[in-house]
Length: 139
Length: 138
Image (tube, each protein chain N blue to C red):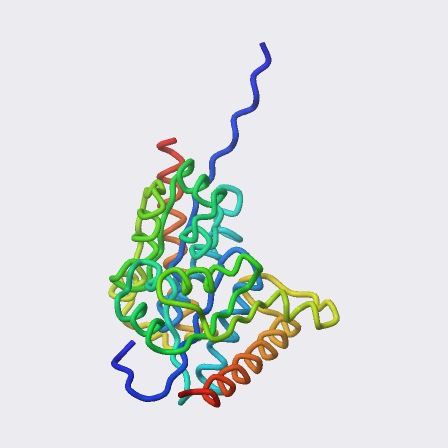
């Protein structure tokens, strides 16, 4: 009997992309650093707004794969919205925590990240990548 | 989002993470907000709005809004209609692109010059729509 090759599971990274402060932009940039560079073969992102709008493909994706949310502020909208969609929350990171650990960085610009914002995004991306590795080892 | 008492228009961008048009919607919204119409507009954080942010939903119910979506799924528009009411105007980046000469858009992370030019066009369109809304403010 021929068996189908198992579908390779990916970790879904979901940033809040909050638009009011630099922290939302950092969550977004860190997500791109992971999904396009650091762990591009094992991760992907999706549109948070599309997920919450009830898009069936997006809902299936977050229910069938482990997800990491990346939130800018303590309101944790990405995590809340993922839970509302019934997604598989496997990890939750916050930019505000990265900020506490790197107080010498003062990100200010929202539209395009300034050097401090870019640096914080890279630090956060490394944390996300470590989390991804941990989840894949457990799989 | 603090207390708002004067005439303000809320700009709600989809900020879609999965496509370059989502990034354009975000950059255009920030440009309209910060440069073109800083005194007439506020932005509403869509994730917070979707997660049940009371202030955000009340603002979108009581004040006119303009939604800026990356694609024809129009998530910002759909969410605004679902939770607060019909937006005063809707802008879709892919519609704006149809009227341009097929610019080669870059990655969704870092916009190239052509994508930035599209973002500027969208920002100008937002500003025009803001003026139109304010012109008809009762």
